[in-house]
Amino acid sequence: MLNIIILAAGLGKRMQSDLPKVLHPIAGRPMLAHVLDNARCLNPDRIIVVVGHGADRVQTMFAGQDLHFALQQPQQGTGHAVMQALPLVLEGDAQDACLVLYGDVPLVQGDTLARLLQARQTGLALLTETLADPSGYGRIVRDDAGQILRIVEHKDASAAQQAICEVNTGILAAPTQALRQWLGRINNQNAQGEYYLTDIVGLAVEDQIAVHHTQPSAAWETLGVNSRAQQAQLERIWQAEQARRQLDLGVTLADPARFDLRGTLHCARDVWIDVGCLFEGEVRLGEGVRIGPHCVLRDVTIGAGTHVEAFSHLQEARVAEDARIGPYARLRPGADIGAQAHVGNFVEIKKTQLGAGSKANHLSYLGDAIIGKRVNIGAGTITCNYDGVNKFQTVIEDEVFIGSDTQLVAPVRVGRGATIGAGTTLTHDAPEHTLTLSRAPQTTRQGWRHPTKRS
Ligand code: UD1
Ligand code: CA
Image (cartoon, rainbow, N blue to C red; front, side, top):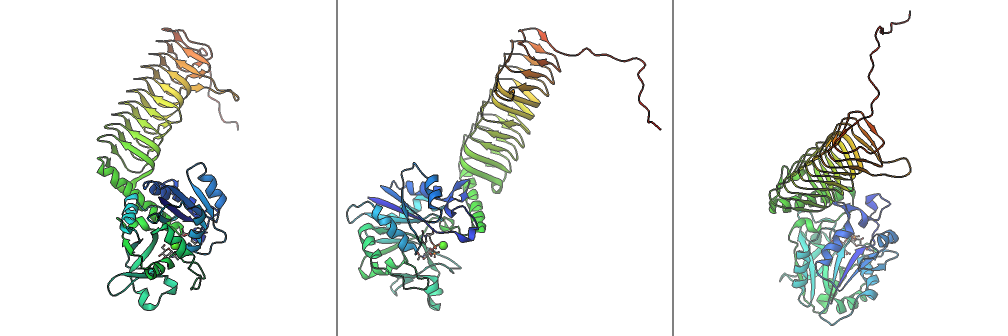
């Protein structure tokens, strides 16, 4: 039986924020969501989150997940925090473990945690690290034989202890039954007047329970966030790591330092991504897709061979194979672009199917429309889909040619093969294979004179 206790009650004063610290994002998701992902890699029987500051907001954000919350009010230290979780901890046999994680240490990876649990055997295991500058951290005190004796907090440490570079990351795995018993024995007689979770290490040694340790696979895994600067630093570290993973999977990134992923990105073979792109939500790129510089893609699926050119913005859209999108295209929710279709600069498409081989290359708004195959949408075409109250649909059948600067006042239908003359305001359906236009006759005034300046 594995219980995971996540400490998330702290104030996060240095964030200077009304938002509880663990709700501040890394890669677009609350820090606590990252911790939970990594915790779930271990298939725990129960996850308990200890909340305090902003408890309501934390609980609301994570409502409906398979989680338990323990309230810690007031916050009297990490040991006190774990005590609040104990009534919710599932009981099993003496072999069972509790794993303690921090809500503000978001990037500790599942494989590191699995190694920590393994290192524990039946005893206690600490995740430690050796730092060039250990100040602020609890120090790992060992005996002459190298056995861990206890943890001394920085503020309680002697000068000799402060020189120790091996530190406590705070993450540990303990035998559940012993943990209950140790927490009943700790006190707050220390420099900070707090109940230190770290005091259980000395008690384990007293009880002759083995104290093991392991180190994280990567040093950044145990970095915590106490300030906006640390949050920004961790964001860059995580983005670099995500970029590295994409490179390993065979994606080309023009510059891994200018790649941002806030969600998941699935790429088929030979995808090429230029600088400064942002991927959000769930993005799928087919084989050979090319994404130009400075594009934003959020919850989109793009078919093989499609190119998205610079400065395009795509959200909740689907693009089929071998299409050309952008530069400066905007695909809004419900845009469904067919194979080999072209969407050019300053074209906005919403809730619209653009059929295979169709083109809307310049300056258009296409909303609530069904557009067939091999249609040409002229520059400046606008579907007038909204009367101020309701939205209406425009249907354009296959092989239609819409002249430039046409307004299609929905609901309206353009029959297959029709041509709409430039400048038309279409208010009635246009029959197939005909030319329809609405245009004031052109006149030229003979004898007209250019006005002159009045004296
Ligand atoms: C703790 C460790 C220290 C370790 C360091 C690593 C203790 C006594 N010390 O110190 O050995 O080197 O982390 O960063 O454990 N929290 C609560 N309730 C509380 C206090 C803290 O939920 O009453 C949570 C915080 O929100 C935070 C985590 O526990 O997520 C750690 O608390 P923090 O105050 O940062 O601990 P440190 O003093 O830095
Ligand atoms: Ca801390």
